[in-house]
Amino acid sequence: MARLKITQTKSYIGSKQNHRDTLRSLGLKRLNDVVVKEDRPEFRGMAHTVRHLVTVEEVD
Image 1 (spheres, rainbow, N blue to C red):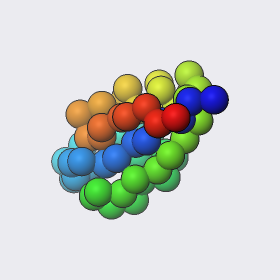
Image 2: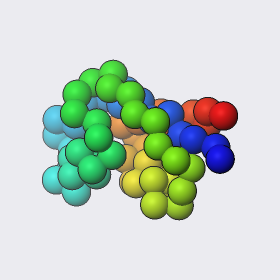
Image 3: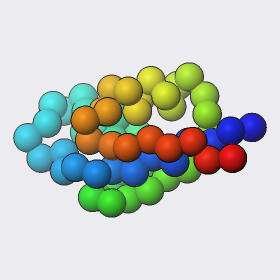
């Protein structure tokens, strides 16, 4: 199954509380943190919510 590599590229300072909570639920705590998650609709939706703060890459 495919996996997603999600990297936090921008700071969450000044962003909405909802965006901060989404980053935390993805497992991102600080700038340049990287997590690898399964390619599921739930994780894609969360990454889409904070798309201005993260980059997403597909990993096999």
